[in-house]
Amino acid sequence: MTGDLAVLLPEVALAGAAVTGLLAGSWLPRHRQWAVGALAALACTAGLVAAVAAWPTGAAATAGPGASGAGAAASDGVRTAFSAAFTADTATGAGRVVVLGALLLVLAMSAGAVRGDRRESEYSVLLLLSGLGTLTMVGAGDLLTLFAGYLLASVPAYALAGFAKDAPGTEAALKYYLMGALLGVVMLAGAAVLYGAGGSTAYRELRGTLGDAPYGPVAVGLVAVLAGLLFKAGGVPGHFWLPDTAEGAPPAVAAYVTTLPKAGGLIAAYRVLHDALPASATGVDWTALVAVLAAASMTLGNLAAFFQTSVRRLLAYSAISQVGYLMVAVAMAGRSGQARTALLFYLGAYAVTNLGAFAVVAALPRARTLEDYRGLAGRSPLLAAVLVVCLLGLVGTPPTGVFLGKLLVFGAAVDGGYAWLAALAVANTVASLFYYLRWLGPLFRPAAAGPPVQAVARPDAWCAGTAYAAAAASVLLGLAGGAVLAPLTAGPP
Image 1 (cartoon, one colour):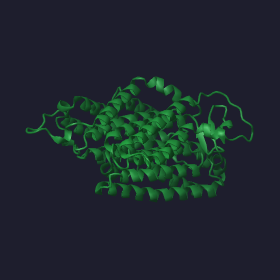
Image 2 (cartoon, helix red, strand yellow; image 1 turned 180 degrees about the vertical axis):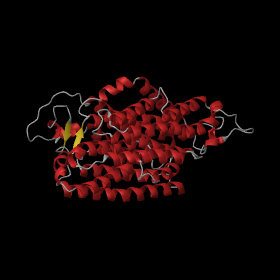
Image 3 (tube, helix red, strand yellow; image 1 turned 45 degrees about the horizontal axis):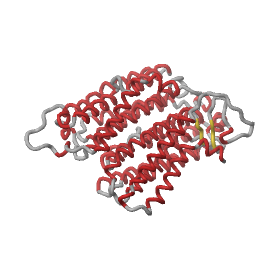
């Protein structure tokens, strides 16, 4: 048991901080509730340190034939916990860094907005619990563990979406919850079908047993599990909640739901397809299905974003299109040796770039439409510069990290024999430049005559600082991509 918990140090840090914060928040006076947010940031930092320290190096390890927990490490340095229900490998390490780093940015982005709120401590606890669920999905090696992580990631996020308790927030939370509950039930039913077909819920056992199972149940179970994971990621066909939730939820929560769940949903999808249901072992060729869903996500997201005037809805549809590019790497699982590296790097680059754009939106809460940003370059040149870096970064403009991530994804598609998918992704990338430029154009136009527009006055200091940090991280990932890619290639693909 002690060895199992040692494998789960980042997750234990979040769980401990959530429980401590919940108890402390019940006794702290309102003007000192910020201490729970500081505790949450400390837990994320400690989790990051533990994740980096436990990064798989490929060093050999030995284990007895019946070993489990931390001792059940394979020769590639991968460690497992609770009879391989949780796997700590390179994908888990990268997912931890992305999720915990993004959580730190969201906490910083939220600090000014929730300061003094009577539910300030609950806000930080909900973020920690939802982040813990996402980390559980990232490392899940069993369908039941995956579903437990899905619930833990989702339920606190529903509450966060309606945290403001206003009409838009209530509508956002309701749509988010209804879609999540529906696809969660579908996902659980799919896990039950796969259990009936393979006789187990563990990935490593399903890999060996599903090859002899009937084709129909395996295909149905796979599609149902993917439906739940696509809801978490915000991809077609589980994307309907995302634009309304991003528009109605508080800005920092909108940044959270368009960023962090992608790491849990897409890494989990890669692991399920690669570890539990490889096409060579099950006879179900899911590559074409995932490729079509990737094409649909990137195309629908771009088309829907073209004529949006709301900045949050534009970023939400942009998030849907980004899922399509990320799913290209998921589709290439088992077909290209660089698929996992492309997925993990792109997730990290997208997370900081998207959070940087949302931090600007959160810093200017009254700027709701594209036209509200008119003259921003003159009033707040640094925020305008961040917006330029992040929006062009989302397109895939060098030297940002998303540029390198897209190159890796396109290369994986070509290497996996899906050149048409790479060509479609390139076409969608070029097309996306249109709606990002529609937002950037007003920044440099002269401000309207008359008194200063309140929409772009007095940016929130915490959000502005988060925006600067995220934009710098996006550029740094692009410039130092080689150093970052090296540890992502450790361990088996």
